[in-house]
Image 1 (cartoon, rainbow, N blue to C red):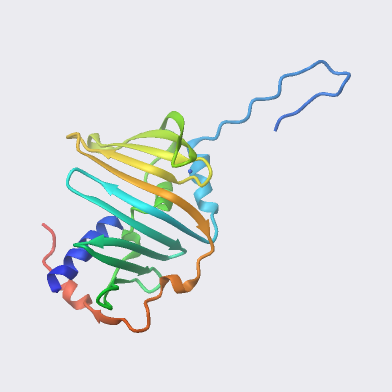
Image 2: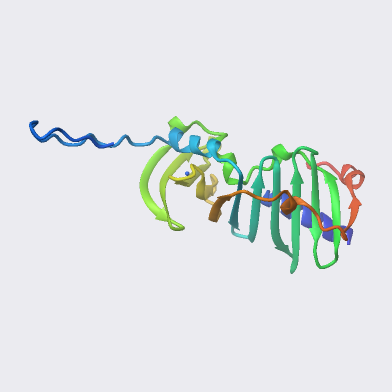
Length: 224
């Protein structure tokens, strides 16, 4: 059971976008071209979203594919994924610096201390970490039913990042990362919706047995 819990935690942590017209006496004038939104303008939209956010999550690499559902509201994050043929629900409370990994079929949950700043794979985080002025816009396409600007970002050490940036929310619908050896990882954020979420979404059922494994995690050997 302990090995399964640690495997679940490891995989969970991995998982964790005016026209004017003249009067009749004036000669016709072309309408001014609409101002093109910059990458910085688009990313800025993600800062203005209120309420909650839900989306389907698909992570694909050479050795792993992971599907899930996410709910975000303020400093709270909930994810639902399948690990070893078991549904696992993870709830992060950023105010309490706590994470719960909950297995519904067993009505058990593992509680541990967790730094919410380590959650990097949510779409609202992509307005951080790179200089928008250095992003190159390649094209405008429709992806997952919405208009997206496809941008390329050169990262250090030969890493390349390609992003399908939604024009409505200013968050990515898809991110493709290629390392210096050509290995590729893809993250898709599908069926994205903004909506007001009830606080109960981020609460465990009352009948769940919770085990605090914080001390157990502290005793794990450090990564080399």
